[in-house]
Image 1 (cartoon, rainbow, N blue to C red):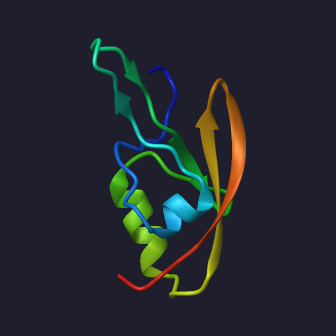
Image 2 (image 1 turned 30 degrees about the vertical axis):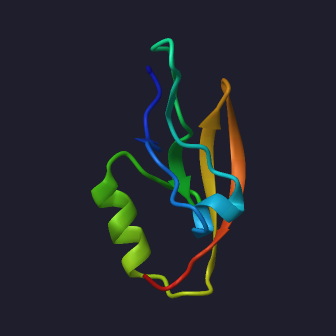
Image 3 (image 1 turned 90 degrees about the vertical axis):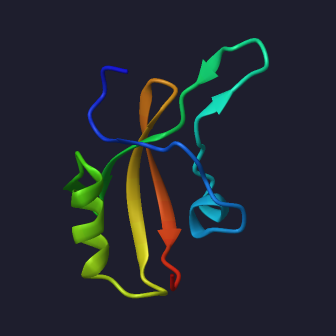
Amino acid sequence: LGVDGILVLEVAPGSPAERAGLVGTRQFRDGRIAWGDIVQAADGEQLERMDDLFRFLEERKPGDPVVLTIWRDGEQVPVEVVLAAE
């Protein structure tokens, strides 16, 4: 994809990510793929791998708002997500 960050493959129904409007990867019947959002940062902290995201989340608690910087349709977009308990 040529963009650094964490590709969103799937967004769970009813999850904080869905409520925030994150978009997962989709495959159409004709085989085309629409790539999902790419999470590049959380509260300004660069994220490159899932481990980076997990470390970031370990320091937060349910109810905390987090601003994710995502790459969508060729531009960076800020998205606020309110964390929930697992």
